[in-house]
Length: 270
Ligand SMILES: [Fe+2]
Image (cartoon, rainbow, N blue to C red; front, side):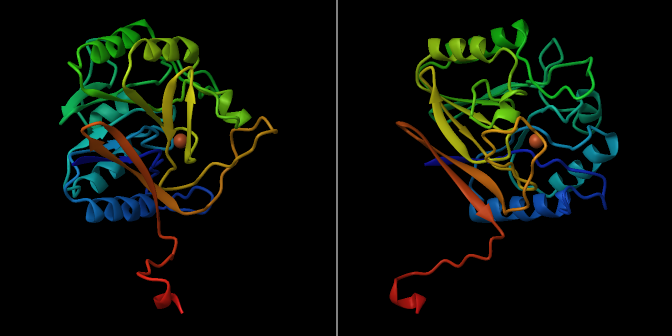
């Protein structure tokens, strides 16, 4: 069975800069190494956006330095912390649409992996972190799903179009989420994969099944009351694993660096 890997929200900074005391590069390297060593046969690694923390050229240079050693194809996506020009300066071969959106699809076995650009801008008003799929991007997504020829759809969008109950993050989801969910619901046999929340969450909205992955770096918090989007916690980083089964998609989320042991047999744990 073929497989793909997911890493969401690495938030790479310039070397030496930390996020809530964590080194984003070190955490990304650790999670990336764990993912590719456990699954060297993965067909691709999807980076689900927020590649960098500030969208700076030096941050993309640091990301490119880390990815240079990656032994599997990388599919990079853009999030609200990214900037297309700075990204493209380091990753000029990334697929772009004629309108300049960094998005693509590729078929792997019985699955079509569709990666969308949900960055809302330019311009970028202060503190604006919500996403958008404009008319051009909706048309791209509709076409990618309509031409699958029976393949399972794996639709990757950094910003969730759905609510999660984490009220602060729900305020900066995809601005036209209802429109996107309606489009997805018109197509059957697909799974939606998102980032943005830095948490492992799954659900089903308007008949569309979805999964959100944690970050390799700082994680989100299950805050269902306070409308803040700035809460973070330093629990373990994680990567996602998608098993591309002939009859659908199986998803795992694997924490890295927890110190937890793998023990074979109850007696061996004594
Ligand atoms: Fe993020």
